Image (tube, rainbow, N blue to C red; front, side, top):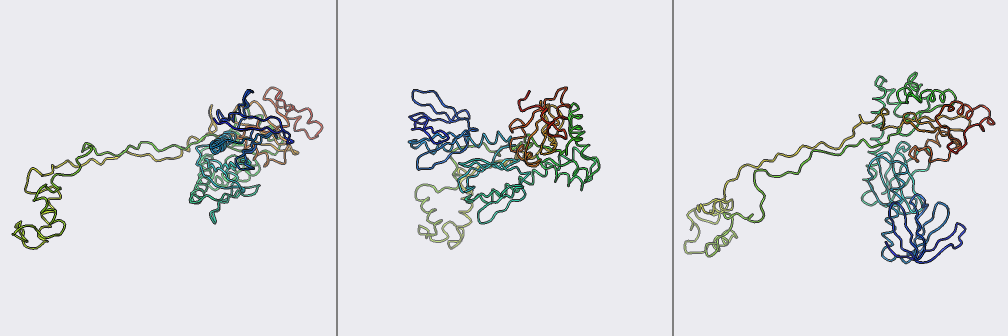
Length: 464
């Protein structure tokens, strides 16, 4: 918590409130506690941008257009900016249902400093003016040149990240690896779902059914007759099969799958190495047999080892090993190893060390955990039906209470918007919501009627 001067401005720039307050980032929100007034709680999802238009001035623009300006933060300014950046990044990852743990990088994107997060299924770039999520399913290629990483994305401008320093190659390599892994998981999942499909047809189907991308039923059937019907049969709850068939009859249906949880398993089984034969000890590492004795004899030994002339009348060969300095080499080599004529200085023998190490199961992906069946499927199966500018979104393998209809530019646009929202249909503004009850078929028929005037009988966007 830190004290600051604050000012709240209306969307038109007019002043609303000013004073002094305590500022803190806690519980997923920015807390502003003015002196003698009520606390203002700003969730990270309500923050549109965080900028510094002037030195030591933090400007926070809210989703509704109001502006909060903080000044005189002192040394806490840097910490506040870092906490806001991390909090907004965590909020964006949760909103998009990012899969797996993030790997963090710092760089520049769009001309401003940004935090770059790489998840198992997406790239998340959090900057001062906003945040963007790029699903690997819509990413085409990763290029690195002149310390700049460029990600080509379908349907939009490429994402360019620079000023990564020595981690430029690391980011490019990680993105390339995650793209390859995502495509491999899709191929493995479809292989388990359609075990009898020809390998070439399976490869082409995996290219169409990338994680989170809906493939038209006509394109799937072109690969293998009845492929779309087979997918609907194996991936749809029994209670939803009639509804899926109704959508297929009335719309241009597209089928998709989206991974919900990570199937990456950490390394297990490793244990630190230790020598089981010799007990660990501290001190006493110098062997008595390898040290010089005190007194005159120690001085003589040190002089000989240093290459100087021997001390005493005997001259070279005084120890009885021959003449010349080289004659002392073998003797002192044995003494350095702890051997010699003096048994008191003999180094004791030790048993051979046991160098057995623990076994390691490396980190891997449990591809068998990818399934659309069961009470908690790890893969979401969904369908998108397009007709006359209306796109219908239906969850196939979960008891989703509503069918959502959106008025948008087309199926691909709705697909990307749902992917960014974590395929939570309620997170997007819908034109109609049709409950799964006894009247569902009639309401869908009215919503998708041939005459636009008849669509007014569809259920309004009230959830009723």
